[in-house]
Length: 115
Figure 1 (tube, helix red, strand yellow):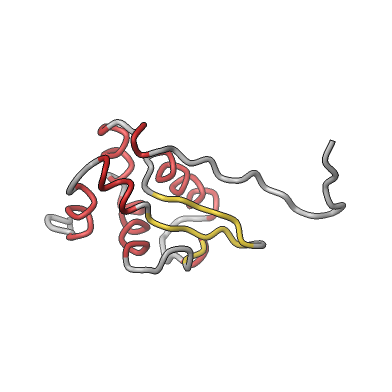
Figure 2 (cartoon, rainbow, N blue to C red; figure 1 turned 180 degrees about the vertical axis):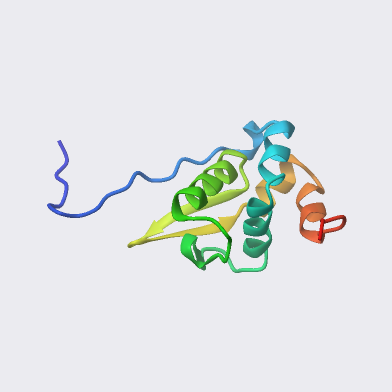
């Protein structure tokens, strides 16, 4: 049985869904929420693995933000990894584009956004 460091916080590594296993309904549901759309757009403008979860300026608490990232992982849009105490993110642009050609570009353009 592996030893765990005494007193060290440990969280489970994030589980990622392969975009090839994502239905179009799951993908569309994931991007329908304005907070998740903001996360996707900010990640698109950032280099891979440079944005920690806490670096996004969105109007939700930690638990809700964690849920939003979980939905994005389940839709194959985001990949996360732990770097020390930080969880960093990357947009799975190429993988998602291969599964749903043109959808991510449409979302990133922002045409038709309300307000």
